Length: 395
Image 1 (spheres, rainbow, N blue to C red):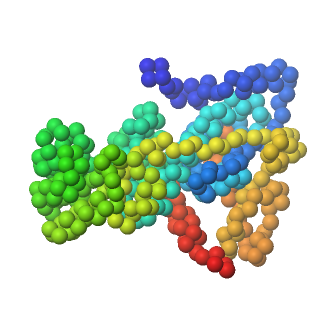
Image 2 (image 1 turned 120 degrees about the horizontal axis):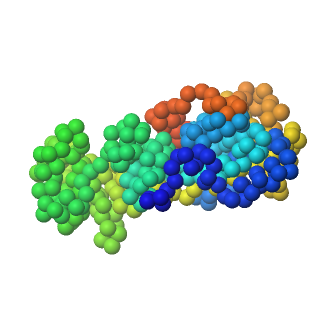
Image 3 (image 1 turned 30 degrees about the horizontal axis):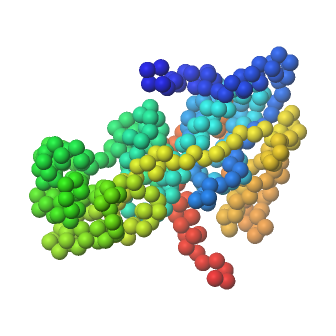
């Protein structure tokens, strides 16, 4: 293990498992216990700072359980979910899938955490550009996973070459401080970039290396003129002061001198809250650690039925469930899978949200490209935004 990682074969064969699952299977097989059960993946409690999640990691879940004799239903990848909703339901003989619980939860928990944080950032950014810049904060082996889920969660682009190849997009980037330092200034670096790099790549000058952002922005704009697409402010926290005023000052000076076309891009320790606070004065955001090291979603996998009988540990709801959504009012409800109603209390028709993913170990349905999943996420985020903006009755 030169990079301290395992390959796909080790994951697929169940070696990435907590040892108590291996020992449980050993005990049950020794005792001849091969009971069929239903297990659900749910989130019991939401994080304090969000009111929804975005499910991700489903595509890798298919890869993990392909060939394992189980039936699986899930919310489609990229779905909004809420606490207590079963995002995945697995049915099969417990000893056939027990050793995959550790890996399965790892796939869903981290991918969904990244996608959820990206979605929070996109909600704050609105129609402003949002780029994933955080791969350098995580182990390189999982950079493509992180940026794929940042993309489907709402990011408009990703920075790492391998990540972009995975999602069939062009990688997005600007100019690092290293280039400005090596070429002795923003003017020299911007001109060199312009001379060497393919014209299809946006010219974005980094304007905080040596001196005031306003001065470096004007130098870059005067050097490239109409060819300069944007300036990027990556102002260190120790020099930041009032960031809004810095952005407004740069905008004023650029506009005053005829560079209204130059956009202002903000990066450097940016959070969803920072985006919300500056979305009206900045044209785009590069988000790193906030997304790449997002809190994992604390999903759990729990048995809720054995041999057709509802059963669950303390704190969990017994019995197989589904999620229904009213087509008229949009209300979502968790209900027993055996008692799916046809209508919502409002009178509108309802539809179950869980769909077949695997039948007896065989994947069903074609996987969707990341672009299609992202489009679905953005549509759901727009619904959430409208709900948040709608005044409550009596207010």
